[in-house]
Length: 183
Image 1 (spheres, rainbow, N blue to C red):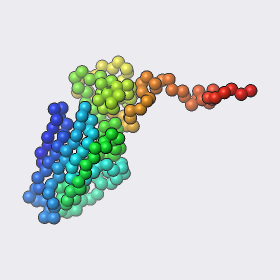
Image 2: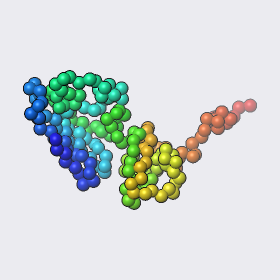
Image 3: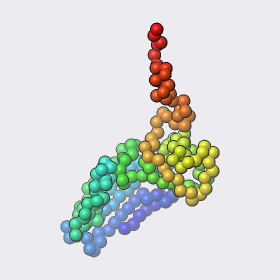
Image 4: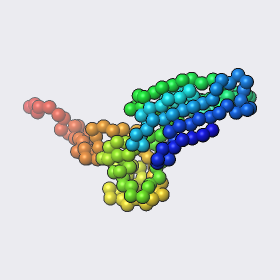
């Protein structure tokens, strides 16, 4: 198995050769290419099936007891399934993926919460989501090598650190419902 990396160490290509102990029914070997820009994946091309499945399906696939003679394709298959996917603008939420879902991040030299949010979510103003889950304040100094927990469910939207405090609460609506006042 060989991996090709980009300049920052992300895998952009994975190639396997058919091992000598592969099942005689196996056809070829897995090959996968990931297309990335700005540390974000936007496309995939491969013959190892898809990981664009639901959370339940991804967990079920990891728990299947394989055959006594598994192939080298995803989930022990003996042949590949071609996949071309350049619709990666919406990230899947399953046990195979990392991105705007929960996970971890290792701080690099010079990183800030805003910079990390920009890199991971495409919106620097979502820094407060990372800060909240790690118990950090707005001006928290980060140390290279520090491990940060990434929160789940972060998506870029019109709501961010600047709009968060100004959103009306349910209590406000209960006391002062919107609309004209009637006597």
